[in-house]
Image (cartoon, rainbow, N blue to C red; front, side, top):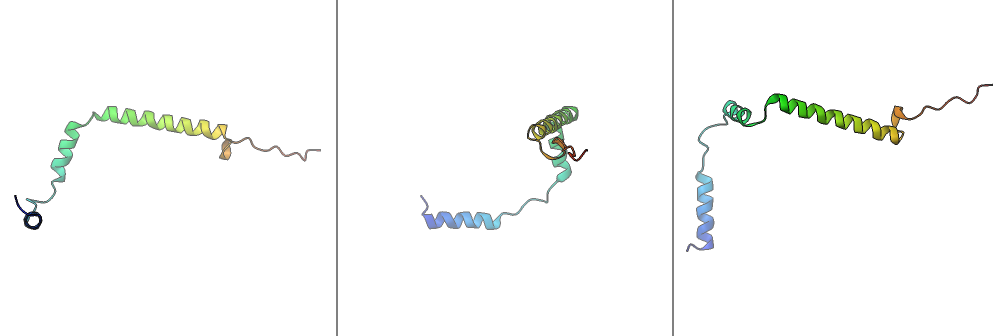
Length: 80
C-alpha cells in the first residue's frame, strides 16, 4: 500500500501529464444534445404555457395588492 506522500505524488504526476486529446467539438455536442432532447414543438408549447401562467399570476397578484397602474386611480374631489 503506497504512503500518503507517494499517493499525492502519483496524483500530481497524473494531473500534470494529462493533456486533452483535442479542443471542444461544439457541432458534435449540439447534434448529440438535439437528438436526445424533447421535440421542439413540445418545448415551445411548454415554455409558452409557463409564460402565460406567470403573466396571469403576476396580473392577479398585482391587482389584488393594488400595485402600479393596476391600482384604482384616485378621482379628483374638487368638482364643485
